[in-house]
Amino acid sequence: MTNYIVLINWTEQGAKNVRESPKRLDAAKKLLGDMGGSFRAFYLTMGECDMVAIVEAPDDAVLARFSLMLASGGNVRTRTLKAFPELAYREIIASLG
Image 1: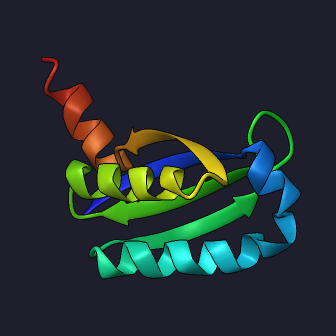
Image 2: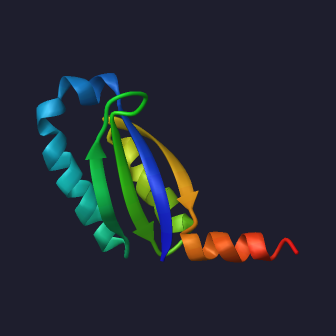
């Protein structure tokens, strides 16, 4: 599985309906699960982002579809970072020679 860090901000619509946010999170978890991925962690955050999720998905295309489906709801905007675990990081650095 590939790891991703998803930075999430509410849209005006999402902030207006913030009380529904936990239900939307549950729906997002189910959606990603149905696509073969999962949420590893989820955080409400202070600062530049409203929320941060650590997720895994079978590949980039699955995560792209998931992100587009979230965006189509109009409640959040996301930015996704592909994350390499420590072992992969060490292998990448070692391959530099």
